[in-house]
Length: 275
Ligand code: NDP
Image 1 (cartoon, rainbow, N blue to C red):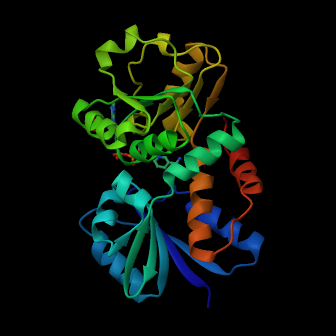
Image 2: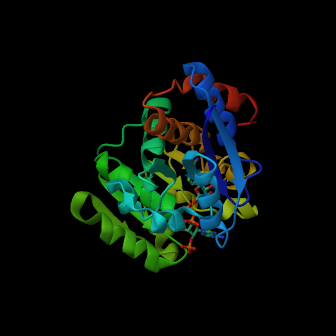
């Protein structure tokens, strides 16, 4: 029988993860079944228990469950503890080990697919949720000169900047002070604002023609930020589809011990997207 995996979240019906993991498994000759399980926060624990009883060996976790997943793990990786969230669950000894592959997935896409060298660069991170935290630590680990953080709730930005500590210059920027900033080398939208179709009120001075503007979301959720970036003059923009594939590959490698080739999977998914 094929080993059982799943992604939990709400909403989940449009998740690309089952398709991505099926393609990885097929390419490497690994038999697996990967389900999408719709679960809200109140049902998550019970749904996960039922999944384990059915033989579930590993799971991905997405909005709004990543912090709940972190809380229920018997054991967590250092990178999961830093971001305070878990997107990858591994069944072990009758419990769950939690890991976070978002930061690694983001960095692999940015560096390998977009050829952006983070070292010494000034980066602006918009958002301070779970994904933003993973991205902030990934940028600091890759030796960014500066990670400036702006968030609707300033307190969360301050907590993130102090968690990064001395490993790179992490500064909190008030939304109202953004207009006095110089252009950044990298601007990352790690908010979920685009899911509601809303545009962020960001000044165009943040962007020069060689600024890379990257939205973690993809599809229509990325459209408002990418439209803003292009209107501001950015020549290099990206949605988070590549990150999605790379974080999935990292989860796959944890579960199956083999790293899949992400290029054909990314190309197949990209063919189905406008951008
Ligand atoms: P969280 O819920 O943890 O954080 C949401 C963030 O968005 C917070 O900083 C929140 O600010 C901010 N935000 C929400 N609505 C607005 C708004 N209207 N205006 C300004 N800020 C807003 O979500 P995640 O960190 O898990 O996910 C963030 C995004 O990243 C999502 O779009 C998600 O789809 C994407 N993502 C993509 C991945 C990929 O593989 N491509 C992987 C993981 C995430 P506040 O603190 O004030 O509430």
